[in-house]
Amino acid sequence: MLSDIEIAQSAVMKPITEIASDLGISSEYIEPYGHYKAKLSESLYKKTEDKPDGKLVLVTAINPTPAGEGKTTVSVGLAQSMYKVGKKAVLALREPSLGPVFGIKGGAAGGGYSQVVPMEDINLHFTGDMHAITAANNLLCAAIDNHMQQGNELRIDQRRILFKRCLDMNDRALRDIVIGMGGKANGIPREDGFQITVASEVMAILCLAADLEDLKKRLGRILIGFNLSGEPVYAADLNVHGAMTALLKDALKPNLVQTLENTPALIHGGPFANIAHGCNSVRATKLALKLGDYCITEAGFGSDLGAEKFFDIKCRFSGLKPDCVVLVATIRALKHNGGVERSKLQEENITALEKGIVNLGVHIENMRKFGVPVVAAINRFHTDTDAEVRVVEDFCASLNVPVSMTEIFAKGGEGGKDLALKVIDTIDNRKAVSNFHPIYDAELTIKEKLEVIAKEIYRADGVQFTTAAEKALSEIESLGYSNLPVCVAKTQYSLSDDPAKLGKPEGFKITVRDLRVSAGAGFVVAMTGNILTMPGLPKKPAAMNIDCDGNGNISGLF
Image (cartoon, rainbow, N blue to C red; front, side, top):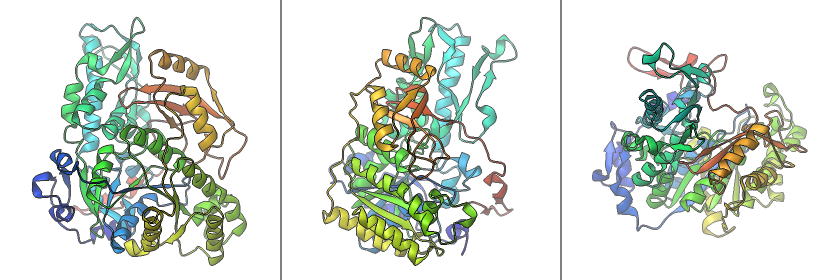
């Protein structure tokens, strides 16, 4: 089989004007970036505001494993499959960060015959959104340091600056740095650090903003630190939030591209789910609902992270109400959860599968706690035996959950028709009516919210706080932010905060080691376990496999 990039490079793409036209969007509402990418204009929102919404389908997954699950691939394939069965679907996905593309992933635009294209563009600079977010973030950082250099009228305490610089690249050397060295002319020396752009509050704000005015207000509410009297200092106090908005004006517009089968896709925003809220932009999702019968969107990593935050943060703020959850798994990943080494996952192992399938069961049960019906999507591999397939089918039947064995990677939309029909049947034929609701009340205390998430979603015995976390919590509460939802930064590999605890961990507590408020985004971030907001590169980064020849042909993106 051809590699992902070879498949993508051989695709016959339609001009982006045709993709827009198929959605009923005339040329006056698109801003082309070349032949195959475009921004959608602000005026399109006004034009479509009276149109009825389509149905909202969230694609999520079990806890990720080295064996892979293929959540984005299923999202893309499902949208293609909807067209195969006569339904109009619009994808609403996140855009990839360069960090993992050059680090561990090599690409993040789906795979096989279920990809979004132009794949190279999407995985690299795309339309410049990531760079705009980085620039806006670092403008605020520059303004903070310049304000202190120029007399520090706000009396900012250089020891208590919370807002960090960012970069869209994995670079562990930038986690903790000292700036302002070299004498008085170079600024005030202080400790600082970088986050990866997708973990930044500016990224979260862009993805949750309702419009340009809301974006500007949220940027102004960023808590940058404290003054010498212990009082909060906000971005609006520095009066650069207007300039930040100017940098983000075009980035706020969703990006229109297509799949390999010319299905329309809106790709916009890209916060990680293990360190941020893990969903694409509210604006892209809402527009997709106006443009299609179905909006297919995804939430990052396992449902304990991305889906929980999609429901409790994104839907709470936006009023979105999902109609169905598609939960992605592979038999190989379930066997890994059952203790099988990666090198032996191709061998039939019913015992390990029966042991590891409890992870799938927890995720199904968790999604139902939000009142949303579930369809299980199993990415079928040629090494999956009939006996293993029966175990999964019987397990899902015992939970009264429809299950589809998909071949979306190898066959594209054709390989997901059964999944599409089961999603349609679940939603349109009211086999299971969505009664969506967040899992906790916003008026609960921060500790109470974390207890609910820990016990109901992670199946923990409770939550324990370090001394530093208790101190941060008191400060956040004193600032009046107790009513904000909670965004948990946690390992994606386990339902617990320990990546080694696979399957269905029991008898543990979640340890919160720190808390910080993202006042502009509108949530409190709880740091658990050994989670870093600036990842590092692995021993052999994916960048070593990526190349570009003299004719500009890129290879190694996969």
